[in-house]
Image 1: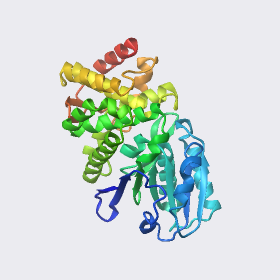
Image 2: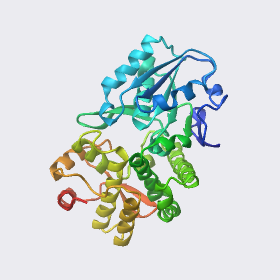
Image 3: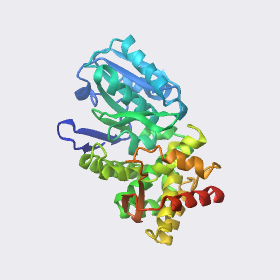
Image 4: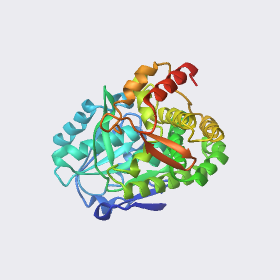
Amino acid sequence: MMTLTVDLGARSYPIYIGSGLLGQAGLLDRHLRGRDALVVTNTTVGPLYEARLRGMISQGRVASVMLPDGEAHKNLVTVETVLDALVEHRLARDGVVLALGGGVVGDIAGFAAAIYQRGIDFIQVPTTLLAQVDSSVGGKTGVNHPGGKNLIGAFHQPLCVLSDSATLDTLPDRELSAGLAEVVKSGLIADAAFFDWIDARSADLVGRDADALHHVIRRACEVKAEVVAADEREHGRRALLNLGHTFGHAIELCAGYGEWLHGEAVAAGIAMAARFSQRLGWLPARDAERIARVLAALRLPLGPPAVSAGELLAAMAMDKKVLAGQLRLVLLPSIGKARVTTEFPLQELEEFLREEVTTGL
């Protein structure tokens, strides 16, 4: 097991990474301290891993709530289901929520913990690659709204993150690839050498080589922990973690939540951000093409679905990075370096989107 730390002063917390951590006696005791707990999981993950997680809890009452699986259920109705369970089982302010599942479960459970009795503790136990390398770290919680992705939420840091890489053994290939999109993002925004490594080892990653997967989980978490420690509430540098997400969130909204996996939409958004960076004269064509090649090698899409450019642009206008009515994008001057910018003509973006939906990559 390796342990990383998200350094937030008094609210710092560890990320435990290793194989076979679920069920390991004593690992969570220091965080639970005999408190009552609610395990939040879903119909796919619960039957596989809930018993192992429960076996790690030696004291206090343990209840659970089973959610339906999928992005389509990441909404306030499902949050209310978790809140109802917290009330039903009479968890007090010293209770703790354990989120067992992928990014959707983590976001819903974390948001419910953030607003129940004005905030109770929670622990992230991510079981998908995307959650292990990205969504479980950093304290962003929330749900979707028909008008936009993740529009309702709160910052609420976990007590710890427990990433058992053995859970990836049951992860479908499509979801494994979706998680690799966030890994690619880490290299593109902060570590060109890591992107080179991903390029060289793409076959090992999709082939589920254990050492390769452990390496990307560790390095992606290191990148995110460093960024979050420097800018917890996304007033500056943390916005770089949204590379590909403004395009990607628009794709998810326009295609219908759940039709595309989040990581698939992010991958398409990263490729689009690279091509738009090239169009503006920021990124050399060879780098934009290389980014697309790496994403393709990881079995990820490179462009938007068959929706109109107007739909995409309207969805992008609801992005959380819009300030004073001005759309901001995360773009690439080079591999390993990203910038948040408003320095592009809106007409140029509109023309770019028309070309993208016509090309249909």
